[in-house]
Image (cartoon, rainbow, N blue to C red):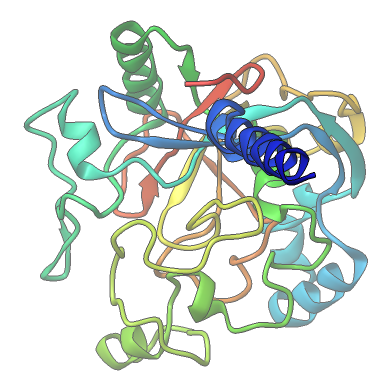
Length: 298
């Protein structure tokens, strides 16, 4: 009997050892780090969501902006429509100055009214959509993975992270999740319209300074606007295919998403769209990268 007990205990220990040591942890397949730049990526499993502005959102925006300004700046966020996307890898953070300077060592993100935007961990800015695409191509050559800018539908799906509220944090304080125009900025620039909270930064914050969304992605709203692959078309949502929409084939403007550090609440929304010429650069324009394909073990 004693031997049977010992054998049983040994078998239990043996199988526990196998589970802990031999079987890889599931999370190990849900993230990878690019060895060239140290950029971290998380797996965003595919799925469906309602893309675009909600009716209640529209009412609040019209109330604040008036009908004419709403039509000019926000109407392209409608109609709200169902979209399905395949899974993809997305950068956990926005591309930083240090990561971009591995490609272009002399890059200057400049400053804003005496406040530097050039810190190694601050998001790179003063980059055009064309610059961002060139960077992705350079990194693809260096690493062997195919890096690119996200499509707009991928970006909004990743930002919402399963939520259906105006912002992915629901009714919580924006300053807990995003670097936006806040009380600190308003003290410096009194004419600004600001959030009624304080995030601790007047200009861009080091990436990852705030809480992530439920997909583990940081700064999806606030900090810097992020370039997307799509060309802008005001009425595209009316014609958008349900599965993996890619935008129109050409245009005059590219899409930027996510709002930025000097934005008031009306821009800090998961549905908010921005159009910019592809060669535009500015103190609030940056990007993050994605990689297509299924999750793989490192």
